[in-house]
Length: 304
Image (tube, rainbow, N blue to C red):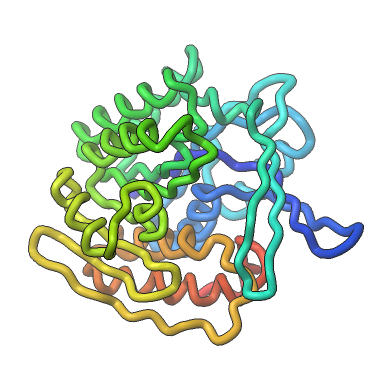
């Protein structure tokens, strides 16, 4: 069983007080890939990461870190003379975070462009599962976005399962209409959607998680799981819907990667043929752990 996560990894700077920054790396799809690799390691599930990075020391460090996590790197395009994007995190006393980005010249924008992009397309169509997000769509060039959609079509024709988390970030789009148009195409190829309600509310004006689920089911998605900012999770299919209640964390430290880790545990459970409701409980359990520590990636010895 092989799954490829498609997206962008950036250098991460964490504001830890006056004159002090912690450095790491991260990105929504990369966070999910790390947790999937950890959970899938003993279950025969291979996780690969598809992206483009530079040939600088920080890109070398990223590659070393991914390999140490058991993530395959054959889908990574190294671009000569380039460097990855960068972002900074500030976290308030309640554990909520804000992000500031420097990514306009990041190589990941071009991962599907040119001849190297054609090679990536062909390789991705051989996977059992493909996972991508609205951030993936937002960072790509227009050509790259169209090529990703073509890749999804071919992969699905080959029997792959397609998973999409809308993960709407307004700054990545010229306007909401552009984002909605891209998301509608993505949903037309998706088997599973893992949206966050606050994103759907911002982009579509949904009043309740049920609105989000109904719209995505009408778009042809078979399985919709609506995360609701640490609250209950709505799992919906054509056969009906159920609500999975979450246990509120008594003292969240950092909510970074809460949704990303939920997605990872959910997908690994579904790859093991667990029911969607069980998978949602697994996702909520891992997210609960993640928000109790600082940073997107927990130390390995803390994993469930």
